[in-house]
Image 1 (spheres, rainbow, N blue to C red):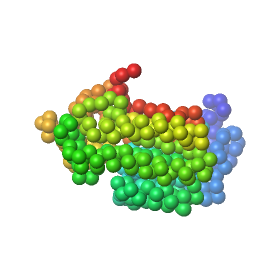
Image 2 (image 1 turned 135 degrees about the vertical axis):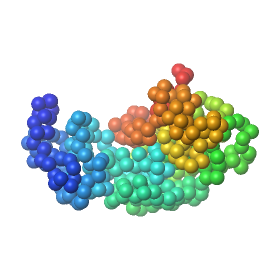
Image 3 (image 1 turned 180 degrees about the vertical axis):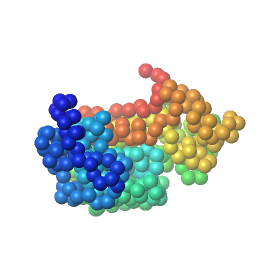
Length: 346
């Protein structure tokens, strides 16, 4: 499709009612100009109330909208990630990276089981027929089995698992500055939350994926797994174990069609930094600075992030979606760094 054809199609876009605040091409326009959008399901041919901002057509990037429910499936890109109707479980889905992954999967037409201890307003805003929230504490050894059973019972299958939950366990203050900052109980809690929760979720998910003929597992690790430091030593050690686990699983289950990969972010602007008592407040107390200065200047410099800023959760989510997609069929056992240059070694 050449530039003149795209331009002509855009000129024929019919504006929706003013309340929607944007325009979307009609099926007739798409057919006239041969634009390759998938046929809309019956429920997607009617408008059901005001659209969200994410439903806007971004013609600079040649996005084409399909009218749809608020629950998602609002736009189809010319580069299709082939995630339509795939069933995904996302842990730690209520905020930060997990929320961005959940939102992005819904926009690609996937069905998502969002796992978190509590429902947040931001997650609730994504609600619809394609989203199921499951409240669970992943430090409970029995929770992963219940989550997977609920996902398969509700949506009929399981194709994708995003092991995103991790970070600071409840009741533990981070960052830590050295080896003697934590006792055995705190080490165990950090390993439980950042390694064993993923082990159990994966153990519950793989048999269901094998029944399906394959699947994709994406584990969220950290740049500190490959660049050890005395800061948060327990966390880095747990995530190093996770990266090793990813490689081992990809070798064992790759022949059965299950791809296992890792995304290793640097410092991301999430609740780890922003919530009260989080990393920004702890470092601010150490440095004699305010929390905003920590997040805007001190943290990026401390982490060696050459962009000079904390990473946006959506930037990590975009890498996760690519790995979850069948378009990454030969990406197995890989570790994608989304760390703004944090990791310096070759």
